[in-house]
Each structure stands twice: as C-alpha cells, then as structure tokens.
Length: 200
Length: 168
Image 1: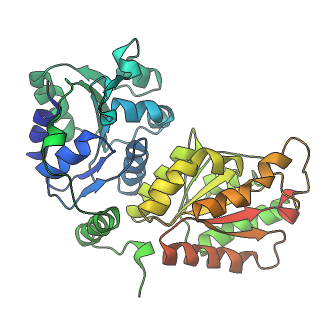
Image 2 (image 1 turned 30 degrees about the vertical axis):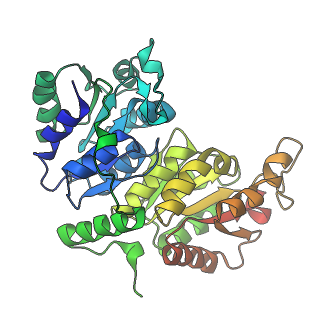
C-alpha cells in the first residue's frame, strides 16, 4: 500500500472536515491533493494529534482528522494515553507507518520496523477502535468508513516507503498564512468570531 | 496558596475570558484544579505531558476557545518544543499559568527546586515568550486581563509565573 493512494481516497471524501497534518511526506502530498481551507498543515513532528485533539474538543460537532506518521507518533506517545481517556467521538487518526524516518533521506528505521506495534500501543492506552491496515481494500473499507462514524478511531496504515513527496511541489503557503486561512474558514462555517483574532 | 486566593485566581481567569484549561498538576497552585473542574463554564483537560498540554490548548484556541495551560515551571522545559512550534512559529495565543518553583520568591524553595527555578526565566526569554512574575495578588485580576490581552495581541504564548504569596 502506498500512502499517496490512501490520501487520494481521503481527499475525495473531504467536505467540511478539519484536517491536521504533521511534518512528513504526507504534509506535502496532502497539500498537493487537497486545497481545502480546513487543512492545517502543522509544520513539525509530534504536534498534529495534540492540535487535532484540541480542535475536536473545541468543536465537537465537526469531524477532525489527524494525518500522522510513525516517527511523529513515537515522538509523542503520551498523546495515546490522553486520547484513550478523552475518546473524542469526532476524531479520526491515520498514522502512515512506513517504518522509516524518510525525511532523513537515508531512511533509518523507526521502532515500528522492529518489534513495536503502534495499534497495540494505542489499544493498551485505551483507544478501543485501533486497527492496523495493511492493504488498500482494507483502507477503503475500515479507514474510509470511519469518517461516517461518530467514534474515535485510530488507524495504523502500513505503507511502503515511497518518494512521491520528493517529486511533487512542496506547499508554498507559510504557516501563518495557512493558520489565518484555516481560522477564517472556521469563522465563516461556524458563524462565529474566533476570540483571539480581535480587532485591529 | 490559600483557598480564597485560589478562588480569586479561577474567577480572574474566567473574567479574563479563559474557558479551556489543559494541565498537569503541581504543588503551588493545585487548589485551582477542583475549582476549574467543577466550574460549568470551564473545560478542564488532563494531559500526560506538558508538551501535549500546549498542543491541545493550541488546537482549542484555533477552534475558538480562549485557552490556558496550567503547569509547574519544569513543564516549560518539557514543552519548549511545542511552545516554539505551535505557540511561536504557528502564532497561537496561549496563557501559561505556571507554578514557579525554585525561584528566589518561591516561599518553599529548597535544594530540590533551585536549579529548576534558576533557568526558568532565561528559558522563556530564549523562546521569546513574554512573562510576568506575580509575587502578590494585589493586582491579580488586572494582571490576568493584561496577560490574556497581550497573548492575543502578540498571537503568542504569554507566561504568568506565580510565586511569593501564591507559593505559601
């Protein structure tokens, strides 16, 4: 299974969901596949699930999606214990697990290339609906189906290492521009003012 | 901290607009936790690490909450990465309510805390996070309002360090 084909399937399902990505190839691929104003492309590892959790809690009626990687989740395993207790019903987490730190260019293995099973870690942390997905048909069935459910879901998608993200254009929207687009989109769709925006 | 002061602190946070708090408990200000938990206008989220307390607060702020993180000052070291990335780099206002252990005005300072305290303000300054030290409650409500307003204006975290009267 290739991450890009999973993201293509997800992109086709986007309407008013909010999508938070961590820093890895999927940030580049997702920004290429989806121009949705509800995308928040968090630019560093280990922060996407936390930010997505905060959004899910602040906006319990909106579906929030976190696109993360094995290296990023390993950097912030504490998120799993918190999610396992909070269990926000409107959050779906997809972890694209290629077993390597591909951003390092030499692709050193992560712990999931060894004995570590992130879906099992998540289950142990209290996330009941935690699964490993190994092929695209399973992704279509379990992964996409979860978007329509009202329950926390956590999917570890075992993908081959691919270098598509190095072949396509990187996003040229800087973080502040992305943030303001995202917040203005929320203000418009939620019909409310986000307090910190304030007046000039 | 005296119970009456804890009540003032929670009421002051509410009046300053705070309605979402993530936290890891500590000793100096811990009386605020049950007050926050029992307040219907507050959403209190227990985190497993100050690093995620900051990222959850950042997400909630972007989603329309006015968020604070309550932590011990050791949490500044733990969360410095997410403060820099989601707080400073992304530009998200978050009020940091910090029990300031080990600083000179900490009334329970000891060899256990002094190293932690000594490096707190230099670390905040290195991160570019503005801060205010509160040793007494004379202007507590004004200080809380000022801090939230400054965080929003700067689109950045703002740290309130509680010591002195708050650390008794």
